Length: 203
Image (tube, rainbow, N blue to C red; front, side, top):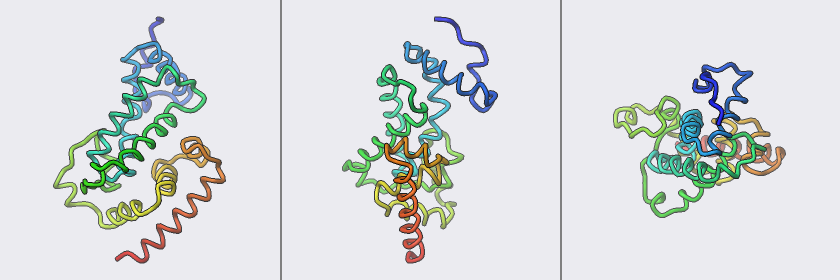
């Protein structure tokens, strides 16, 4: 297989935006041919953001770590079937979302009460251990928001996290959730209304 240019090994943040998409496509093709190093590069570019998504969805760092790891294992196995019609990151979100739903329904998830606040995710490493000191310093509003998200139905929680917290456009969110853009708009509106009502009523 033809060797990839040296610049391909740079992280996405150090690459010119015009070449970013082409770099990722080369890595995907190499990984599909069995290049584990190329796949590890893809993992490095996506793991922190996907771990944050899993943390926000599950409100449990331990579950999020396990789901994140399982997600990349499944992605590696299914990679030969990835056709590139959707962005690679959106494909990973779909896998992660399905695994989060499964984990939430499991007995082990229901029994755990360890939670992680939203503002703890941004600066955390991909799979950090919970820090008693950092948990003691959690902002009360963020803790409240975390609890409020947990009260939303699955469909509404998913769409609000993807759009408001992960920064996906409505079109990208629709792609992940396999629904229409209008459907996303409706879910976002209902999610915000429900969360606002809960917020005003919760002490």
